[in-house]
Length: 307
Image (cartoon, rainbow, N blue to C red):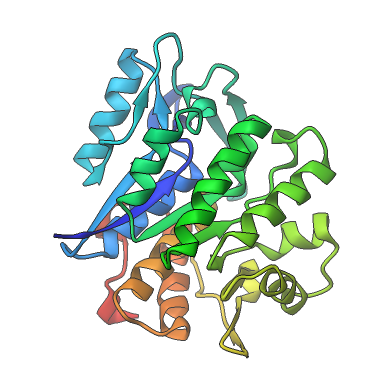
């Protein structure tokens, strides 16, 4: 029976410019993007599953069909009458993106409300992935419930991966965000921070300082992403620096970090050491930002044996 990679969070309706004033509709979201790229590089011995909550509306049905068509299992997804998926629009300028969101009635805000369903999804998994955005959209009680369940699964010896993905506008204040993200890191085996965000909100002076802070919170491996400056990995008492892979041209940086996370985790699960996993993941991220949109098809992605 295949092992399960479980990602927990919010998949949203993505609107992007398609030219001539028209919009293109897709489905994406940080934790779902990571599941997408993990699925691209994991074999049949791994099942990739997504845990969220959706409404009972047509768009929720379309989103579930999209997940299943991509080979991402949705059997634990909760359906909530009267709720609907969140939505965002991408605005691009010189390859850099900004977002406008509509998520006040998003069903995903209630994803951790049903402890039994949440626990069943987590118990089915060998690896659990979540992010700071997953934590941000939840009420304090639901956030605590999610962290309790994830802490329990780490104590059982399973792997927990976490991207802090700091998004201040989703939080009531910076202090609450930093405290919750630190709580998330405390239950994680692996942490995937982005240095720009960590420097801005935690005051870290260097990627090494970021890695040390998360290692001190209990992470066994920290991979700090620093854009064109490359990646800093801390694990097994060592610090490794790897260069970023060049992208030409940079068209859309959406999902750069998510694709790195998914590819890195997939390669680790395939038995690759951290340095090789990170080198391949950097190459994947470079290919992703050369294309528009968050989710890139396999025809644009490198193969693991070409890392």
